Amino acid sequence: MAERGCYLLWLRHDGAGLLPFMEVIIQPTYQQLVAIAAEIIRDALLKKPNLVLGLATGSTPIGLYETLVRMHKENGLDFSDVTTFNLDEYIGIPSAHPCSYHTFMTTHFFNAVNIPVANRHIPQSTAENHEAFCEGYEAAIASAGGIDIQVLGIGKEGHIGFNEPSSSLGSRTRIKTLTQSTLEANAQHFGGTVDAVPKMAITMGVGTIMEAKRCLLLANGESKALAIARAVEGPITAEVPASVLQMHPQTVVLIDEAAASQLKRVDYYKQVYANKQKLLRI
Ligand code: GLP
Image (tube, rainbow, N blue to C red):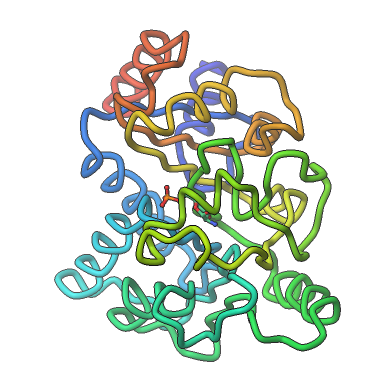
């Protein structure tokens, strides 16, 4: 009975569980994985209307934003008391640039939900005093009470935010130089030209991300399979910044079959998840 009580705490997905864990959920399709991510955020928001969300950009979370927008429009999910902090932003392009993360967030999420403008925070690429800006960003997160749920994508080399391989695992919000791999991956958003991609960015640090109460790491497609395998089953190393999430108190790794294809323990993760569904029906 005591054991079942423990399981139920673990299963609640509400941040109140006492057991640290990294849960790996493998879904057949991208749509199914973003649906689960959206449900986790919806449930947290219904419990805590002033939820503090850490948000990510890139192609991976687009379906999550679409699902949350649908929940807002069709089911009245209310974001009016929500505060958001984005992970990162390029340096050297104006916020209004079509490829900035400011523009991304406006287009894919902010324009379609009711988060007050004053509650939305995105690193400011044109800040003249970057150092003071970074300190202020950390202070703003702390004064909001910390991040309740941090949404994360993953780079091909295992970066989270723009914390490139070799980032200190205790790092805070700061400027990073982007690797050639990231410049090449992100060139698709800049007309396919690597030279057009800004070479630096402001990003929350790995230490900043680790302080979020919960993390949702999303990945789909074969191009992410190696990064996911190294992050979930490899050693914890600054060479793969996402691997430090193995030490995070509550991280859910939500991936499709292709992104799971280099994991050794796919069957086990599926079995664990199936058992969890069974327990929830008891
Ligand atoms: C960028 C972002 C990351 C994102 C990563 C993966 O580098 N800074 O936050 O997770 O790309 O992007 P995508 O989801 O497009 O593969």
